[in-house]
Length: 236
Image: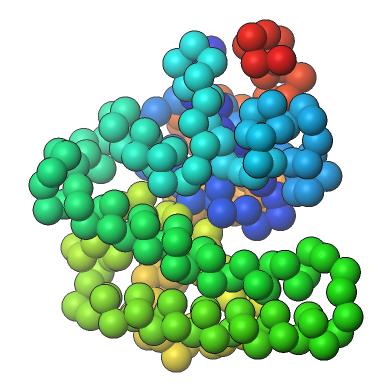
């Protein structure tokens, strides 16, 4: 039985990056699939995360951590793959958290007006205003990211990190919203394309699309919310 269970959201949740991180980490884990907003807004899921958001991670004896930055730092600390370890206070540790913070607060939030316009009913002029505002934010965020990636193989430089997996889950939203062309940001596009050939990224796509033909080595399968509450009755 795994003591790590990740709640991931579909369709196209930012929890995608946490699935990738778990695959890279070498840690055994389970997944719990949450349909958004059908399941994420229910009282049953809000006992896991009162905000009704994914990802969320159960670890230890039924403890819960939410928010991608916190989850990725937890996986980093526990990872059996030392390539993803950063000693606190070092330049690598600071850069990792800097990249995570940018992705979480700037890039992720830039898409918020676009998602709001999709998920809620409103007059067309209001929806267009949100789309126009979102386009400005997304273009600004990708411009800043592009400038930071000169001579970088990955977001942190030469070293692959969990930040790259998180980026893969956010950057794909450009195809859905179609407000800017990622080809105008060659460094961003190059790193995104590199990630698409990574086995863990392919695995995360297969998980979301339910096209998985064989399990990855450390993936122990899916569990339902009901099974979670049977396993951890104190969460009810």
